[in-house]
Image 1 (cartoon, rainbow, N blue to C red):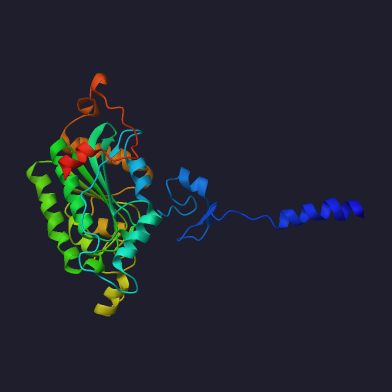
Image 2 (cartoon, rainbow, N blue to C red; image 1 turned 90 degrees about the horizontal axis):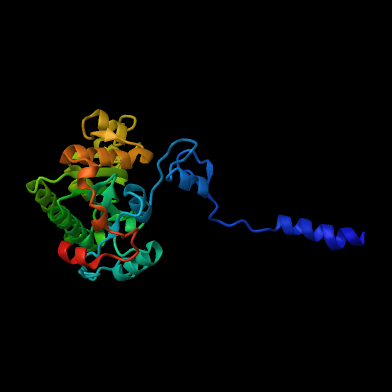
Amino acid sequence: MSWLTTYVRPRIRGLLNREVPDNLWTNCSSCHQMVLNKDLRRTLNVCPHCGHHMKVVAADRLEWTFDKDSYTLIELPKVPNDPLGFRDQKRYSDRLKDARAKSHINESLVVAHGKITGHPAVVAVQAYEFMAGTMGSALGEAFLAAARLAVLQRSALVVFTASGGARMQEGLISLMQMPRTTVAVQMLKDAGLPYIVVLTDPTTGGVTASFAMLGDVHIAEPKALIGFAGPRVIEDTVREKLPEGFQRSEYLLEHGMLDMVVERRDLRATLGRVIGLLTGETPEQTAPSPKDSPSAGTASQPENGAARTAA
């Protein structure tokens, strides 16, 4: 009995009481299956059971879009933190501090430049993890910087959208980013450069009503919610039942609002092919010579020179 009580019983208790880390599994919001995070990483945050495309943080989106070790973040223009001195349940400035601490980025748009299957490109990614990717003055400035850099480098601009719309804490200033981003898109069109939009889940509100629907080519991930107002709001307004799949990627493709719906694993190759078709250049034509090839990898620090020019 002494062997059982002193050795076996403590071992059993240790096995039963062992704590399991919280970050091993993710619950799919579509099929509710549990997926190992390491498996989810391999599938680019796509559920292996049902194919549901989960949300992606901006850093992963850049890594999966650009060629390996080929992109550099740019430093974005600074804007006033709280132009209206807004406060609801807490100060807007405090909300920004919390969002920056949780997401480890400064605002809801991240911009980098590099190569996509050998083609030079500027990529702007809306970060849904930062206040639901909402559009404020900082996003407008960042979008303008991305467009100016694309014009300077004579390269395509690719924008990944994921947003809850305008940022209410900035009021009219937030709404004014709609015409500002439209002007930036016109800069690209005047320069004869491709502007490609990839719409991801969700893309709503003022973002949909401005730069998200002005692309030369519109690509969407499967089953992404895309619209101005949500389905529930529309149903309450028109007092009618909406069609099955309304405001989803496949429905918009069928009704001529999108050019293609592409799975996440095929996005980089598709973007490279589209950029090549729109520019008429092959990767060999755009690639630098070995002696001029940059050694920059996936930069954790922004490239100040490009940022000053872009800003």
